[in-house]
Length: 79
Image 1 (spheres, rainbow, N blue to C red):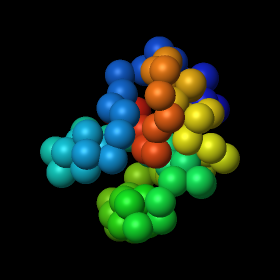
Image 2 (cartoon, helix red, strand yellow):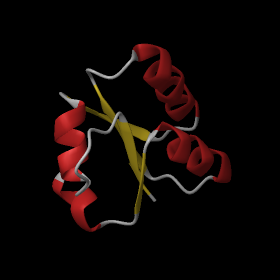
Image 3 (cartoon, one colour):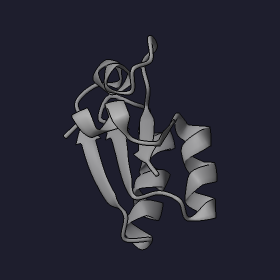
Image 4 (cartoon, rainbow, N blue to C red):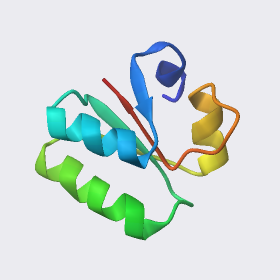
């Protein structure tokens, strides 16, 4: 499932995800389980309200790697 992040048009990071959600571009959201819940929980709730699929990823390190970036990522989305 994380493979689709490698090639898809995407945004990575909490701020970019918030912007994309506000413009209605998001198709699927990936949130890291080990990220700060104060940051990810509101995003998860917003996605549920907008009926956007949320995929939980075990670690920020795995999510960053799936996005082809060299740093950890708390959130990412396919546009």
